[in-house]
Image (cartoon, rainbow, N blue to C red; front, side):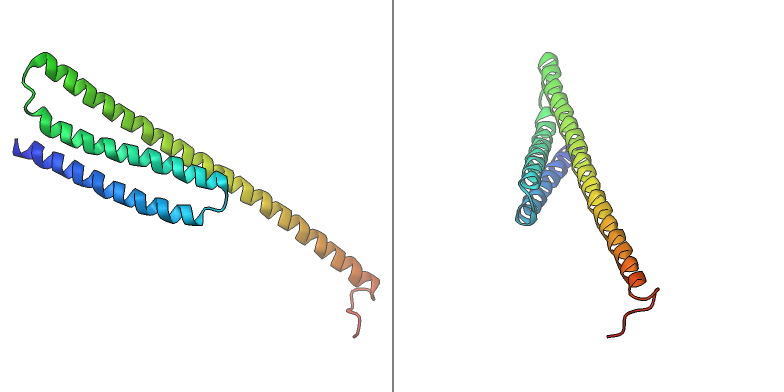
Length: 144
């Protein structure tokens, strides 16, 4: 009995720590977001993570309370609901993983496009400079 109570308290404390961390992260990210899309992503992620952490706390309480459920059919329903909560937590975690991966893939692709544009501009300027140098004296800089 004491072990499952300690485990319950541990889960509740960890869920509280996670919620506090999510709150601080949301405040920082909201301030530094550079676009509405980024702000919306951070808000949805914050909402998912707060929901997940809150449900972890509920599961912690459910584990503590579940010790006193003695009627078999009530226990079956009770632990079935706890199992569904755990499944929902798992689905939210998967959604968070997928959405984060999609955001960073879009960001990486955007940076690659920008890099390609910058490299193309650099090549154009180098070519233009080379042509200018050839016109000004066969590779010798023009005296000033």
